[in-house]
Length: 454
Ligand code: NAD
Image 1 (tube, helix red, strand yellow):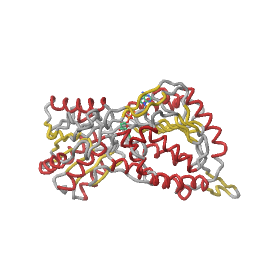
Image 2 (cartoon, protein in one colour):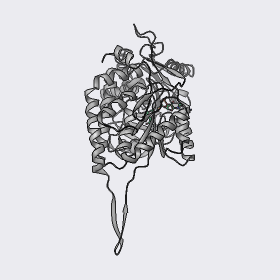
Image 3 (spheres, protein in one colour):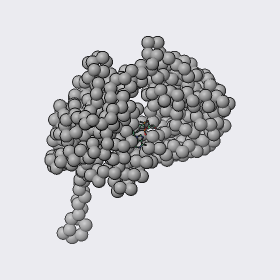
Image 4 (cartoon, protein in one colour):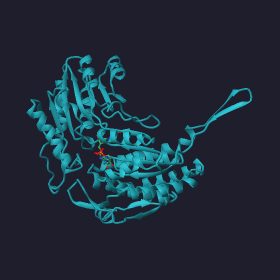
């Protein structure tokens, strides 16, 4: 399928309820491609009633789905994983179209979704019930039961992968689901639903309700939903966590990030420069694991010079995708301007980037800002763009103090050739995921993913 065909096919996104796509007169919201600013689709702005319909379908489907064996459920995910592989090119192009990532980054996302399915089908091998004779002739057992209808709310930055963080595991374990994709990138999950149906997923097991805030609020409030998984910004994660748990639902809410990479003077020059720059610019910096602050300890000028060289080889529209929207471009450029006004030095300036032939697209070039201080907004707030702020520190203690001072704590990393110094950062960094000599320290299954603090 080429991009043009994809555009025609997706001219109107519908909700997916009980195995059927439907649209019921809800108001429509345009969906824009950030690649060139064209309108590629519309979505329904659904209401509580739409969520209610999805929950009724999911509750009905739960009766049979939860009593099938895990082995049977796994067969569907084996077939679905093969379909993802078969449709790799089409699914990749859909991500490029709706999110603006490069083809390679988008393909990696689908590959990760396949890996997540592989993990889900291994669940029967890794979970087991426990039985113990607790006193003479008396046995106790622990059994794992599906909760019922669960919900998943996704952000815009990984239209294919983040829905696969939750959907395969939740369904493999016998739950049924209401999924709410980001209104900015609703297309990938349409194909997810179609391919799951083709793989044999029974109607009602997965339902998709499109829209914005109102859908999420309905999910948090609906008495038929047992658990909510949210991935998005910290501000909304807090709202969702408080609202869902106040309704006595289980809730896991992953928020935003401000990841610090500590670079020591003994770090390997080429490897460090290329890792730091790739971390801050990959997916146009729109990854919750992206490097946002580099804390340069003592004499690291040679590494910064090399980073500048690396960043200058990154060209928007060629090896750097777009950011998600006009508002995102404006926000990111606003942060760069604020840092400049506050006295920081812009070593590489990505403001005002345009791509010939795609003038309507939203591009920001890679940006390196030096001599940032911890009180500047670029140092403390999530920018979510291809921007790195360099804070200079005199020694490792000061660097760790700067990292610990952040309200966020998704990831941190250290670049050094000293095992002892690396261990100090591993022990003292205030982040859920800590890497050594790696710019994007993402764990892979079966290790869990999760941040600390905000
Ligand atoms: P967002 O918080 O704006 O939106 C996420 C979801 O919440 C969307 O489906 C949206 O429709 C809904 N939403 C938005 N405002 C709402 C409101 N007031 N009430 C209820 N629901 C609302 O996030 P985004 O801009 O789509 O995604 C980027 C953010 O996600 C970044 O902060 C990034 O760090 C974060 N993120 C975190 C992780 C992680 O694992 N921690 C992973 C990916 C993205």
